[in-house]
Length: 289
Image (cartoon, rainbow, N blue to C red; front, side, top):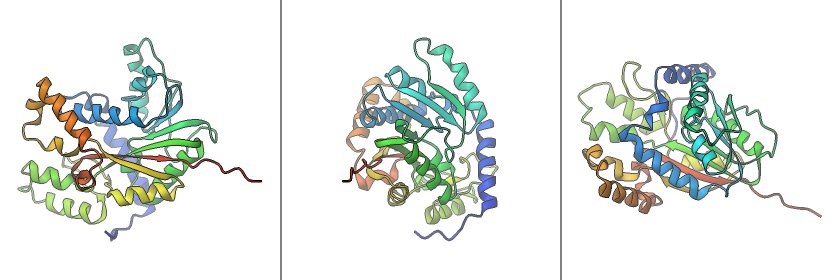
């Protein structure tokens, strides 16, 4: 769908400030620990461990928040560097070290996905599980992806996460939110352009970009990568009514996780997943002569 709402440089600068404001007011450290978010957490790790290069390897967790996955990666034998735009997240990550006495991160720094402070060809994998839906300008997203390309060694792995363009529609329909007259225009714009602009007074995430699968692959390819597989993180499982009640029952939880994995590559169902993960590879160098 054609973007009929071009984004200005001024809006791009406001975008960065909105990210900082949003996470200053949001406790990201506990979000994925909540019952309703465990599906996303477990499925993300399931996809990561099957697609990262074998440990030990050098990994940058770009936009990794308060080290939600970083310490876990280190516990799996990866040399993990955490980079996040939000100073609060880096402080929380440092404080969280007390809970991981047997592992440590290689580094923790406040930084911008578009300007990574790492040498060329210095790491084996780059995770971007947040920057692509927070950066509203296409040029900024491609700049972040090209930075990942720069720091990766040849044949290095990129793993990026995106939010589905259809997520706001699904939430409005399944949570009976249409009575609020502000919702329909927000959903319509997101469907048409991918640009999500919630009313500041609504608890409906922060301004960002929600992807279609084809657009996600195009952006990654534009940065020089060879796109691989797109995985549905939650898939249709999160649509289950009274999800939390079912999730607390071990047998049902295990079945839901099996179904999510079984359906993770079904193209016709990717759009109903709240989050999507794309794997990609930096091409190997071709020796000449």
